[in-house]
Image 1 (cartoon, helix red, strand yellow):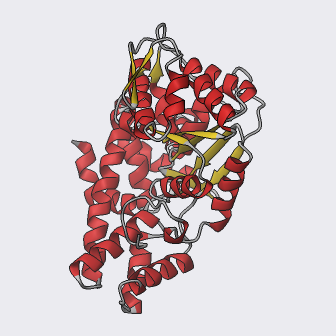
Image 2 (image 1 turned 45 degrees about the vertical axis):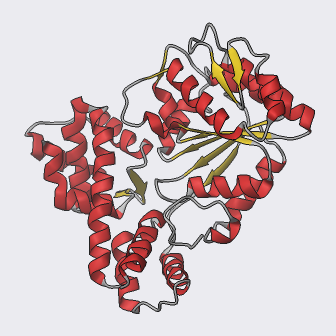
Image 3 (image 1 turned 30 degrees about the vertical axis):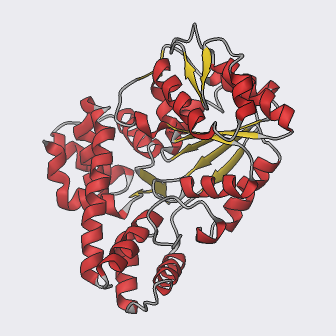
Length: 375
């Protein structure tokens, strides 16, 4: 799979760099660490890193894609069970013995090479019992089993029940399970897991943290050069520099640029501009999902992002910008909470007392297409 293939990577030779992070994840899986947290902004390669680690370690795994809950205000226990059922069925075919263990769980029946929950009610199907069955199968096989929740911050929307006691029980007693939680909204993921909250079932438990960030400028240049070399292309250095400047070190956007250029059969600035426009539209849609869930403060979030994008990026400058926009005073506590929510969602970060928009495509969108958010 070439570097510019837009799909998540599954083989080590197709994953650019990330040696340190991959080794850390492989060690955690090999040791069957009970809890691993893999974080980083969107499109920095978390899913690729996870898939490569799983394929190279040859351990059984169940990956639950929580992205299906994006844009929703709430998630029911039944919704989680449906996704879990599908995730198990995707990997169940080679593991006939796993099905033998799962059919012992109340509320589960085996149909051919898959399972079906007889009900999606927490009173009829216990997530804890499902995890215990998977653990018991792993124990008999002498293997660690990975259960990964991709974009797990979406589970913070779960209503009517909490999975944290289940995770804590698995941590303490299910020794053949390695639970991995990935998240692009870093603060929101930690807020969901409540690892530093004394009232949380997970409080005080150690865990493995692995963080992915954007490529450096050097890495971005090297990534693009290597990707084009796979197609026998030597793009002009000024186009590479232009791409790195406009798209930053976001691997997903750099991959999209390389893929588009190779598909079009040319590498020039016009392709960079086209990709930046596409990327900005995607980033803007994702921001709209964030705002829809916080509609009462949406105008304030947009004003803050406009301020930062225009260079008014210190606390005092943002506050002044916001007060001019609203024609009224804003309290420090209100501003603190707004900025914290944007940081927790990995939309902005704070560096040396300055607030910066993570994604250059989103910054571009705010400056060029921000009026769309006012509708």
